[in-house]
Image (cartoon, rainbow, N blue to C red; front, side, top):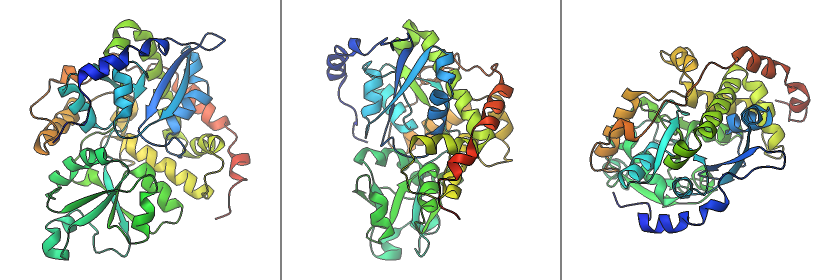
Length: 369
């Protein structure tokens, strides 16, 4: 797997400009923290971030959250160079970055399952991972997969390999940009590389898609919250406060998906969905964070929001080696820390906030079912 990050010397040149963004504060003294998203911010699935900011959980920690959007691996580079405080990249990006000695570390779990999957048209012959194997013999061609960015191939390749699909022989990668799902919907490309939060939103917007779940073939964890070694060393209280505020946002979303939908719909009122679809997106977000409702891990994850698990990361490492993302094992202590995970906050207070949130007036703005 070719390197996806610029060399360290270039990163450290960029870091010389980072000082102006570090420790910036609002007029009322809140420490500004920037979280970089690896795509557009105008979606309905980043709910825990908006809950943490708009319900005051960040303020309780002396923080103000700013979300910025990027593409490819820009998010992880910005954190590594001190131009942002946090990001949530996929495990493949994280492991490759650490192998290249970028100064980053996972500070909290976020997506507790393998979120990398595919959407296909309901009329497609491709209905399972098994159907993707040996594509040229079965279909006379490689299967075309729509990507938003060329680097996204790294995210899903471990899942394909685990499913017995050859990413080089069976798949033709097509960089189709932000509206890549349209090309799949119109039948111009075979499959859409995606994840539950996005897939649930597209299905809720009446795209005729079915989701092929990566967690069925590779039961790892996915995008965690990442920060820099510098921030951990110099401002651990900022990392701790951010992780705690995010845990509250995660719990709020799990506890009351309708209230969560209302929060994010207030943020992005122009996204054209029905109310049912808006709530459906939150159910996808909850699935990413806790797995299937009533599943064997759900209670453990609820009681330990933000915890990184050794077995999941060991499997991520193995999958990354098997798919060529990294060359050799990386010590777990170089990948993540659980020192900032804290679930001693008042869960009942978060439940009260969710129960009191004005859902009715938001719901009334949306199309009838």
